[in-house]
Image (cartoon, rainbow, N blue to C red; front, side, top):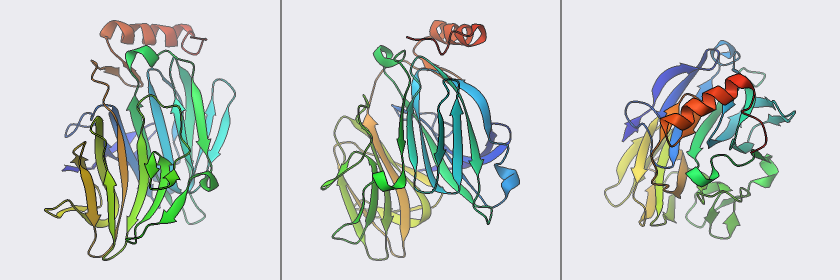
Length: 274
């Protein structure tokens, strides 16, 4: 079990780091999970001004408020409530992400980082912008309500495609006395992050509360119940099993590749065609 820890990123955004900190530095291929949730605009309005990425993918999922996105290639997107964006940075991108609250000031969302294997780290950048209506949602037989961003639940299939790690990303609400079950592939690493209420996992009914992440076992069937109600992100993806060299917004396989990424950024070559 991992507890989210408060931290500050970007130009002063207050958030909670769940994955990518001292307690759990990574869970191959997952590199980072941050939750930003505040009703105080001063906690998030400074946002994440222009910054580079190379060698991995960033996933933004918005529950409330919005995130305005712009990049060095002229792309512009606005992620409102229920929206997601799966960005493959690949060879390189320079972008900004600026949170915007609701009229009452609330901003709530997540950013997940997913690694790329060596053979794909320098591919051309790609965006998958997913408006709310494109993300299938349904109430299952045992009462759980799911939104499937990536992967499959029964007959529901998420809109994210063409990702080398074959990811699953599901937003799951389990009502009081409801239940959710899902088979986790043998080759996948997986976790559940509870962000509202609490849930009980597995045969031992281990209680996981809001702000806690549970690492799951690939090849098993996840069983989730709740005595009151709970909501969590379920994420899984194929393990890459390669060395990780990491420096801020760059994730490569060797220190030499990190130095090259820094040099490319400083010299203006980061966003050139791969």
